[in-house]
Amino acid sequence: MVDGEPGVTRDRNYAPADWSGKLFYLVDTGGFVPASKNGIEKMVKVQVEIAISEADVILFLVDNKVGAQEIDLEIAKKLKKIEKKVILVANKADNEKEEIDVHLLNRLGLGTPVPVSSATGRNVGDLLDKITEALPEITEEEAEEESIKVAVIGRPNVGKSSFVNALLGQDKLIVAEAPGTTRDAIDTKFKLNDLNFTLIDTAGLRKKSKVKNDLEYYTSLRTLRSIQRCDVALILIEAPQGLLNQDMKIFQEVEELWKGMVVGINKWDLVEKDSKTLDHYTRRMKKTAPYLDYLPFVFVSAKTKQRIANAMDLVVKVYSERKKRVETSKLNDILRKEIDRKPPAAAMGKYIKIYYCTQTDIEPPTFVFFCNYPKLLQKTYLRYLENKIREHFGFIGVPLRIKVRKRE
Figure (cartoon, one colour):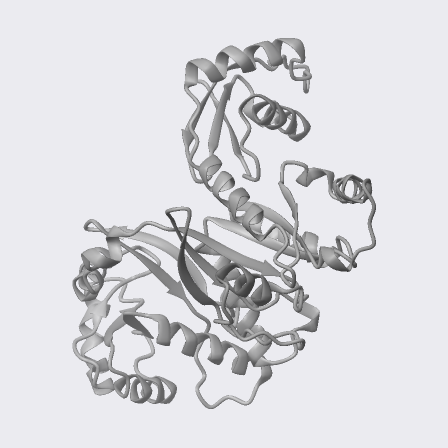
């Protein structure tokens, strides 16, 4: 989001980038006001400081049209104290005449400014060259070992750290009855059945209205960041409480990031049950959230270690499903029959014809349907096509990306 008013950007926004063969993340932050006592600006300050601590290279963006202000001098003073590469960027240098003024920014003491124009893209390539030159090289040790990245997430106090401890067989992580004990994402690597895993134990996600201080604000964003970098999210809910609105919000967050999902019903040992309890519980949950019918459920107890290994078996299954690719010929042979059996409804007097489909990507699996009027194809029919893909090809626990394009 871009606006003329200050303060639009508040969170840290991550975006993957690729330049000169180097892959890296760009992190956009809110306006940094070091000494502010304003509540929102203080929270933004926390986010900026986290971004600085995580970064390998820092871009200090200054408005070339107004020159170095007192606040710029204050920020520059702070940046000089950290042992990281800082690139001074003079934005709004929209032409050669305005570029002459960039030397005035030398007073910041951060080296020669790189003049750019974010409005026109002027000199952005030169800036990207400087960024990639400053980025550290990835060592062979960091690049060679592949692991399944699993984010253990859920509402506060659902037993995330206890689950990880039960899986690892040791109290590596702090466990406490008070919610919010885990304040940051903690990565734990281990092997199971000759497979490498990276477990990301995260702080509990809270409703935004209940995020009251800088620490909890930071905690929630860290959890979302953990979801971004995982392959599969193991979402824990409390068996005695059942599926709550906040649980469904978490499902939505993970689905929007196109990550695999496994639902762990924790504290199953606290539920009074008979031979039919498990089936009744599953049906009730899927009735509450029918749009999540493709998710696998596993009933666990971190306390007794019941079905902990089963949960990880499902994680491996979902991880494999995210990488699955269906041959175009096989896909069309099967889906053509389903489309002929139930063709899309006409819209605005137009007959909609679907010509063919192909899977264009994995992680997430992405399917593109080509038709004559893509904008008229109803969402309910797209859901029908998605359900048929699942019915014939599986993709358990994996959100599918469905696209429609006009056949040229």
